[in-house]
Amino acid sequence: MSDPPSVQEPTATQDTTPDVSPVPVPGAGPAADQRAFDTEVPPRSPVRTVALGLLVVVAMLGIVLLGLFFAGVRHWVAFHTGILNGGPDRYYNFWSGFGSDLGEATLISAVGIGVYTGVRKVNCHTKGCWRIGHHTLDGTPYVLCKRHHPHVPTKGASHEHILEQHRRHQEQLGVR
Image 1 (tube, rainbow, N blue to C red):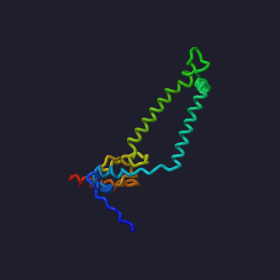
Image 2: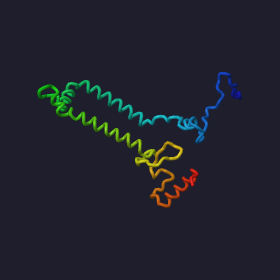
Image 3: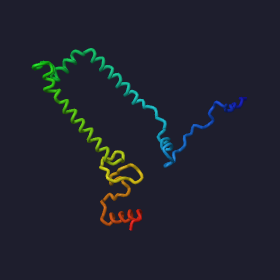
Image 4: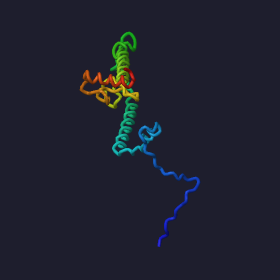
């Protein structure tokens, strides 16, 4: 006959609280909202691990090949950027050709980043929506487009609808 399994009593150093995270209640505060995002990360898939390993091997092989054929690579880069066979000085062809585009590339990049930043500032805050947001959502810092705002008609507002909304707003303020 087998002995029944022994039950250990918890000691003062053992934690007796179960490892159960509370279910977040909407609107219960920032701590509850944060716990909603504290989830366990699933393990990586084998395909992703193999792809990452293959990428590392290819990068290391590229570095080794670059080291072995550095003189040839350096000559190719120098020839195609215009550093070889220069004019009055060594770098004349570079700054007259390939290097002159660096300023233009910098300017285009700066303008592109500025436009992107401006669009992100004024577009609808719904994830994935690139429409311009004109309507604030009361009680939140969000600006939404007419498609995602709950109180804006999607087919356009009639004159009667606008007057009704204005009347409701005036009643809320106690004007009249």
